Length: 131
Image 1 (cartoon, helix red, strand yellow):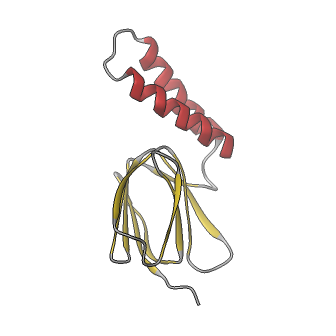
Image 2 (cartoon, helix red, strand yellow):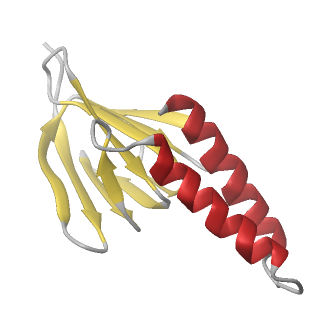
C-alpha cells in the first residue's frame, strides 16, 4: 500500500486542489521531479509546464501551471502558482497566446529581463509540445 501525503495547489485566483495524493510530478526549474511520501524537505521554483498528481486511482490529474513555487515539508506539499488550468481545459491556443505575449515584450526594445523572458518562452514552447 502506497503512503499518501497532503497536497494543496493555490493559484492567484483560487484554491485549485486540496487533498491526499500518492505522487506529484512537478516541472522544476532544472527539470521535472517526482514527490512521493516522505520526500526530503525542499523549496523549488516551478517553470511553466504540466503538474501531475495521483490520488491513488489509475487516472492522474494534470494542470498547466504558468510558474510558481513548491514547498515540501513533513508530508505536506504546498504549490503556489501564478495560474493553473486543468489539463483537459488547456488548449494549445492558450499557450501560444502566452508565447506571443513574450514575443511582444522581447520585441519592445530595451528590456532588463530579456534572458528570463527567453527562458520562460522556451519553457512554454516545451509545454506546447506536451499539450
